[in-house]
Length: 115
Image (tube, one colour):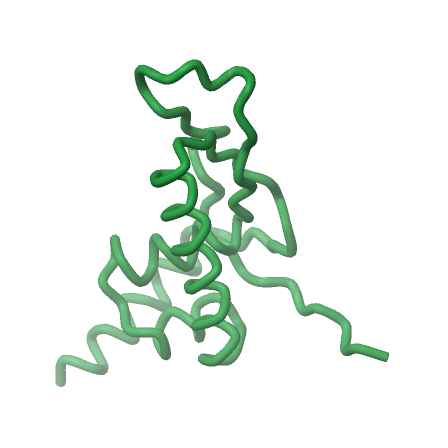
């Protein structure tokens, strides 16, 4: 029997429901489902420029699990771009945490790392 999937901490859910390719009749096209935790992994690693270890600690998962989530997200986004598919965000295994706690923890971690 496989282990139960732990909830992944997400600071803020995506502010969009999805994306569509511009200039393509996309109403009949398939959609790629991007999970909230995959969006969070892309945001932390590529937008916030965190390394995998720091991002994994914020999400409350191991570094290898973060790497798998990040890789899945990148593959989905690449597939959507190349095959001109819609991207739809779906809930997945996410647990929202308060932004105030997130900012405080990140500030402490970054301050500690700089010294």
